[in-house]
Amino acid sequence: MGRKRKGEAVNGWLVLDKPAGLCSTTAVSIVRRLFNAQKAGHAGTLDPSASGVLPIALGEATKTIPYVMNGAKTYRFGISWGSKTTTDDAEGEVISSNDKRPSTEDILRVIPEFIGEIEQVPPIFSAVHVNGQRAYALARENKPVELQPRRIRIDDLRLISVSEHGTAYFEVDCGKGTYVRSLARDMAEKLGCLGHICLLRRTRCGKFYEENAFSLEYLEAMGHISKESNELLPVETVLDDIPALAVTQAEARLLSNGGFLPYEPSRIEPSGAIITEETVFQAKCDGRLTALISVRDGFVRPVRVITQ
Image (cartoon, rainbow, N blue to C red; front, side):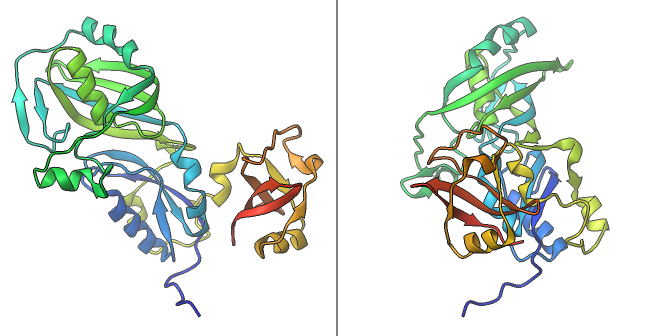
């Protein structure tokens, strides 16, 4: 018999406004403690020096994390021109510097080159695996790190302002796997100068936005947070654009035990949704998510059972 998990069965999503200076895993641990939750995880790591939207999944919501990871993200960031650092942000050591600063016109001219599907090499101080090790671990030991370019998607890149000291502030809408530190590095190179990130804040991660995020100070002031708290969003929050099959309680029990159901397309909402064997969609009983399901050989089969 398995060992019982400590804590309560808390299920749902919390949108945390992570402060700069705190790593994502520590933030998750704090939230898990505040809810006394059995299980917690996060969707989309934020660098310790970055702030902003960190979606935290509690309990059964951890099974839906991939649907956030694949979603669009928005960041606000600043580039300080004139110096390059080991980490491509202000946390690293300066390895080269010069007096060259790009004009606003030059910045606007190169922006279109970074919109769309582009190749990007991650920073050497990143969690990318290199021969079974994290790149940042090798970099800290001063071992050579050679990373391959990855295909990423940038939907939009906007220049917001330029300070009197020359720091440029941007907003970017991007897809999974984009490193804003690499974007800043590559923009500086394209402009023929040096630069690094001096500010990084995520304002959107999938379905979650900064206006719906709670600060740690606010949460800690509440003390122990009930699993019925209004701050907690339903598990299915991240699945509202995924087709759903309404099931009876008996059918929900069958799926939860690994059983199959005959596939009836007329029961799928929205009507006319295209379901293939690769489609993962929802089974809902009385409006609550009970399983992630798929169709094969004419039967609905459970992919992940959700216990709420």
